[in-house]
Length: 383
Image 1 (cartoon, rainbow, N blue to C red):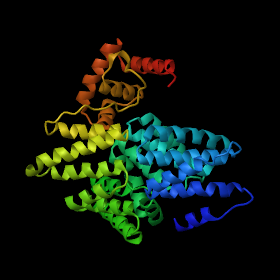
Image 2: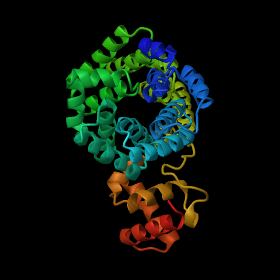
Image 3: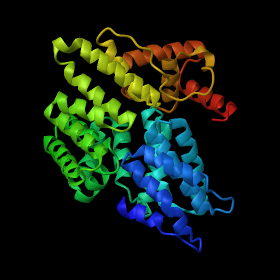
Image 4: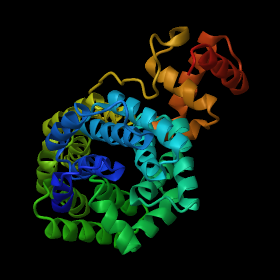
């Protein structure tokens, strides 16, 4: 961060392209460190100095990095619009260094919305960059592991999880650039029964926090990981309050509520904290996470409306409910009832019930007919 600031302060009298890019890469670092207010001030100042003569590389860089910042701030739709346009330009002018950053944002956003088709499209793009030698980001491996878990369970991601945790360089890079990674690695490792990997991830997060005491987001991530590993509600609460971005704060609160749920005397606190997590997830467009928390609240007899888990512009077609739309979208992509249930956090029997309603409302009789009808509907709406 110190060198990035110094680089921006150096005056360039000849208008070199790389000098024009330096302020944007500083914003990228501010985003990673979750100094979001500072990043927003800088990007606004840069937007005011944009020129029509800017090269495609400068234009693509400004859009991708601005979009990543907006996504971290919770302005998801605006952020994705910028990243999408930036990637289009970057792919056209072969600005390969930008692609992993943009692909990670797009894949992560799609995953949080339970739009697995889009998520896997960008995971495939990340894999292609890796094969071409341009991967360059631990975040890509992490997002790929999350997609594998969402699609087929944590066992499907076991190799990637072990690879990330046991690679000192990859793990260190990941922990200082993606605040949600430490807790996810601990959670996933424990699901695998790999306590050694969970302990290693938490220890590495703690070491990163000690090495970078000026970054509250790294400390929050370390506390979150340790709180999960040690089942320490105090650390989870501190992490939730310390995180600068809303999604990570919601994640820590969800884990805190999950821990308190084991204590009968904490019922009211558990419900209150789950509801706070649900509100935050909803605010940042994380429909998949909101759906999961809403189902946890139902276990306490609290019913909250679940927002759509797959994006649909305008009115829902054929009078489908939000859940029916999500089920129809995922089934049309070829997912089994078990896979749909896993992604929407409902049982396969509930999936079958909603699918029957979809068939009735759309006058269909099979998954094949649904897939064909759904594709035709998307083509009509230009999606």
